[in-house]
Structures are given as C-alpha cells and as structure tokens.
Image 1 (cartoon, helix red, strand yellow):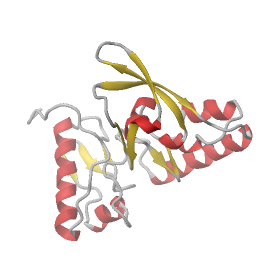
Image 2: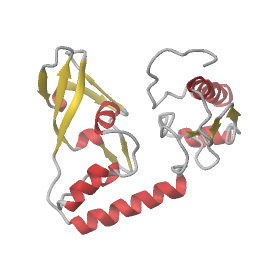
Image 3: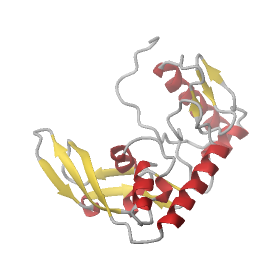
Amino acid sequence: PKVARFAANHDREGAEFLAGIPGTVGGALAMNAGCYGGETWNIVARVLMLDRNGEKHERTAQDFAIGYRHAGLRAATDEWFAGAWFDLPPGDGQRARARITELLEKRIASQPLQLPNCGSVFRNPPGDHAARLIEAAGLKGTALGGARVSEKHANFIVNPDGSATATEIEELMERVHDAVKGKFGVDLMREVRIVGERDHGQ
C-alpha cells in the first residue's frame, strides 16, 4: 500500500492495484505481482540490481523474461533487486486514493487479511481459479498442525494462532495440490516461493 499511496499523494495514477499485495517492492518485481488487472512490470521504467560483488546494474524490462508471477534475468545470474523506478502518468490523486480504498475494501471482504498468511498460494490455472478448485475439492478449513486452509478464501493458508511451522504449511500446500490433482487432474503451480530446505519435524 505504501507505493500506491505515495504515488496517489503525488498525483500519479497506475499503482493502485499494488494496494493490499503483501511483501516488498523487490518481491513484487521478482514475482511480477499483480491483481485487479495490473501487474508490477507494466509500470516499471527500470530497476537497480546488485550482484555478488556489490556492483550496481541498471536494467530494463528487455533484460528480463517476464510472465505470469515471474520475472527472471535472461542472461546474468546472481543479481538481486535493490530498487525500481516506476513510470506512472500524472493523474487525479483523489481518484487514485478512492480506488485504493475500494481495492482494499474488496480484499478485506474476500481475503483473510486479518490472519497471518503469505498471500495466494497457487497460481490460477488457465481458464479457472485455484480457489474454486480447492473449495470444490472440499478443502476449506483443512488443517495440519497450526496451518489451515482459509474458510474465507481457499487459496490462502493461514496461521491463526501463530503456531504453524514452515513444515506444516509446506506439507499442507502439498496435500492441497495432490487433492486437486487427484480430483480434477489440474496440476496447480505454486505462486509462493519456498526458500531453504525443509527441516522435517521442525
């Protein structure tokens, strides 16, 4: 919400869709985060990258292979996002702020934002919605330890009391994936990225 509000407060439009997306600008760039018809890389002018040696590199969209919830460098590796310049046209700040409020209210009404979660777990398959498939498989409310498939939005795994371990969350993701594949033949792809190796039982 900070980027969207900052832009609106400076009478720029086009970043409103970012309101309510969890994470950082770096994460939004890496995942090409988006919703409500907007995607991060549609508003990027250029990005600042750092390599392993601490060297800075400015890059543009042409340097990346960009797709649905993905953006990766075409050539160089081992570089990380350190900043971004967004190309947002001048506009009506009041209208942008109203749109931000509208989108946040829509998210609050449909997503479990009041509970710890990592956002949408699976990408939407072509022509369908991951949440619909998960719900149709009867998985809403399914729990594993402290992790639970949200009753409010089936494509969210929540940690209601903060007791869920990373292993429980990842294993619940796998159960959901396998159940949907078994029932509908749809191989859901993760939208979240798992970092590190699983430590079973921890």
